[in-house]
Image 1 (cartoon, rainbow, N blue to C red):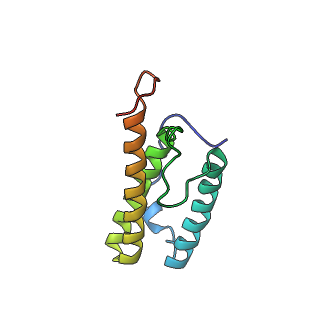
Image 2 (image 1 turned 180 degrees about the horizontal axis):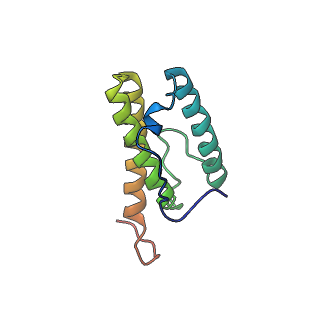
Image 3 (image 1 turned 90 degrees about the vertical axis):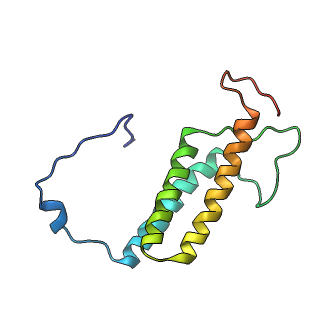
Length: 122
């Protein structure tokens, strides 16, 4: 529900969007918390994450990296850029850790899975 396969064009008069009220910093933080909780809830239902620093059991393959994972990584990078512009260095550091963990998971998945669907270990 509410998901489309491609981008949607929306037209608006030139000055209309700029004249709309902007969100306060507190409202923006609340929005991000709600959105993060909503998205995280869906992802946690799909797979339970490992505790920080824990590797998957030796005989269990890492989770496949998905397009949804790519989008989450891109979102984290975009959020980090926004926080840099706002000079929120604490959040920049938090996002850096999230990005590092995501890249490590992506690398583990790519090292384990071939494009044709068969698995192998390097």
